[in-house]
Image (cartoon, rainbow, N blue to C red; front, side, top):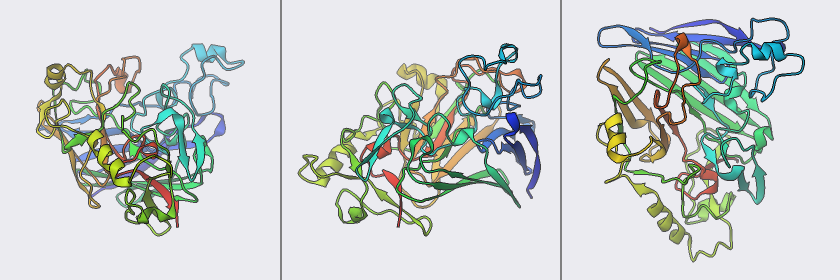
Length: 416
């Protein structure tokens, strides 16, 4: 039996709307989700002693200044780099915090394209598109104001909640109008997240949830005692800006109705009537003798995990594993076995509490991130601070920079 409770989480500044909270509760867990960014703000799970703890990082409020003096509010979006005109006193009294400040996507749905797009550019149907640059030289998680920084429309379900929105043509530089639905449902100890989208024209789409977990309880100093397993035989090597170093990355992809007739391209299943996903194919003049040549070289760049720090097919204790291989942490895509059906992806166990997280997905990849860029400056729930390696993410998604690289999983939405 699942109960769904609806309440107000907070009001957006300047009358921009009300953010609502939806609490889904079963006998085994309780999850709080807000309509701002479809964000999971809390996830309470019992330990082996029956004591519940919140195991996701995040904030207890939208913005610290919401209830302060008149004039302290501001429109939602990325924080300003200087005090607003006429409001320096409010800014100096604490500025913005919570989910309106610059923060690493705690618990949110990210899009239109999750992960990085190299140099913030891609080409579709011979047209180049330029995106906002917000992560070194690249565009990350949909741009400056992605899906995590907008108010979604909720609809209560018997065992969950569905959020929807329309991403306008040209929003953050992406082509075409995109209708999006994100559904959270709870069944016992299983939280299911389902994504659906409908495009008006060819556009890249890659959605995921960016929750940070600490199974010892949010606010615990690190995740070194977590035991990690990822069911992947291969991973994507990356450069210094965390873009995959695919051999085909220098070539320009295009989308064509004839993709199904091209050896290097293949049709993939229709997920709903209006939209079909097609692989990117090479434009003419690449200099390749045949598409198979590219495909064979590209597969070699998808590196096997065997004998590397990325071999997590058997459980490893994270802290000892990082020390053994002298690595700073993980922020890499692991290549999963292709399947139309939901399949096992990853498992994380915390021996101290007995809590176990298992992830199942239909996606071709999972980005394993160990909170390498957390630095302790953010103040979260119950006064917790979040230093480096205090949380981990398992972001099921398409492969990074797929729109610019030729993989077996390069997908775009195309209207048919």
